[in-house]
Length: 259
Image 1 (tube, rainbow, N blue to C red):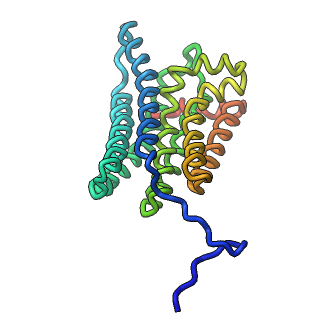
Image 2 (cartoon, rainbow, N blue to C red; image 1 turned 180 degrees about the horizontal axis):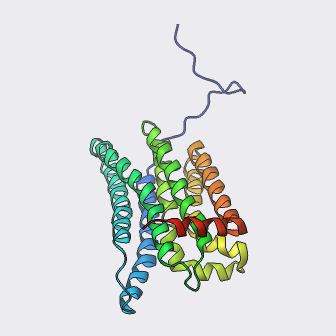
């Protein structure tokens, strides 16, 4: 006797979420190109200004941080292109290297943030509480990438989680490029601070859901849970930044950082 197809509570077999769509190849690449533009415009301008004003060289850890994080974006871009070219075996092999790079990022990101904040302590305009943004960025990234790797045998889930995780950590580049303008547009305060930190990448991440609604007529569960995780981290980061106790705690952590 053949096995019965699974049914929903209405008795109708559930629709399978299509893993692929003819537009996917171009859409995912376009979103990634926009992320690259944000990184290059944000950090490229920052580096140019640093050189123009003849400031002291960046600390060594900043160079390592930049190389590793750029390496992640390069590897992710290669992975997207490998899927586009149907080189799935190479894509899977490269995935092991990406897992190692992601692990390095999770430790290197906070170490770099603490080191730089330690150097800037007591300087005008410093904001130790901003550590909440830097730490939650890495927590959000780690959670999304770990989930994406665990779901690697489910291409639809894997693709969305990995792309969400990668887009999330491009916020620093966009913030350097568009942060002041967005903060002013949202009226400053907490809304302006959120917009400066997150509005740009949030629009990109929401576009993935809109794309699924257009091409599949529904949202993928991985995207829904990914966005819930993202929202939780953004709310936590903003709440901590605005809490007086967090600013004092961050000062103590930064002051105690050994190098």
